[in-house]
Length: 451
Image (cartoon, rainbow, N blue to C red; front, side, top):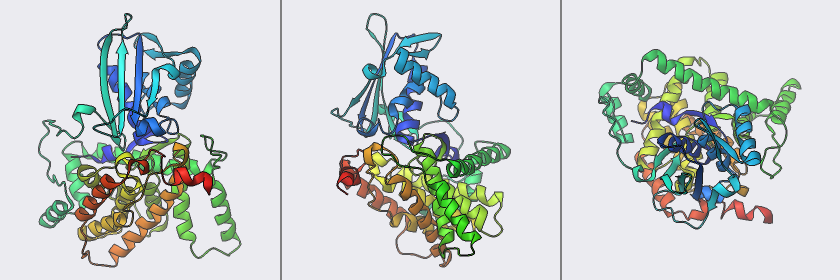
């Protein structure tokens, strides 16, 4: 089972696969050391090498080696650690410090092969004589999930008790729901209760909701230029100002509600691009879609309640898990269809559930959400999660609401199943050239200067 708390993780921007994952992998490597090294060298391969600088992968690696975690690192601590590494050429490790020069010790290797996953890292620790103490290859497989290279794709034997509803396909989800009379959310609640007490599940869900809503608010309040050199200015606050001015003048735009949803998504992804605290949903590059649609439910749907918000996330997580199990949520493997497309599918299903849709309507909404993202490339300009990523989240959120509306107007009957569209997404991703999969070697990333 992939838990709701694995799909929705509190972390920092700008990328789950290039920032959150590498930080976790670096910390796990350090924890595996049985002797204190005098030096650690890191090689970043594949997509991490091509776009790692724009995604702050080197910064994440340094924080991870210093045992910082994405869900708890404080901005002041992060600045101190990075300043020490770049200025004094040292990192805190164990009981003391090790020499560490980011220019020397973090290599962006664009030539090496990545036989298992496009996001690969190689960590090597040395003793005072230059002998290798430990060397490991790690993969960041999307959404902040990481694994040692030899463990990628291997079944996990955790010895846990069987789950009440162990569905791994859309067909199994429908069959179990129809047999039990339970909704997708209710089945997920039963599965989660096999792992955690009810009160703890609610506490964690409410914490995720709070971070999502706070991220929207911080994004709306933020001003200035986003880091990275593209000179992209934040615009969420100005967008809200124009919407409020139109409302005060009694000349609201006919598409004002859509503008609000776009605002919410843009606010989140501007925070993500600035390195702020976000929730991977299921990735950082797509972090604005689910919160925007959840905010739409909370603020604009009649009879919205906290129970509905929790069921929204439970349902969205179930759909996200199906994509991760049967395809991928990594932009380096699937392109942006695996990030914004999956987020749209999750949000569409979540909103449908929160509005009282049947299990068949939920599956239909999820299918619609992905069907109209098939083939979307991941081609960030300058390797930054800004252009076109921020606006793509706004469009993904709007599509999710449209998908939920279409499914609720039907009875759940449709010709293309969720499983079929997941299989299509996977095949499309496999066929897609690597230059369109988070390497910034094709698409908008190379044509931007000609526009």
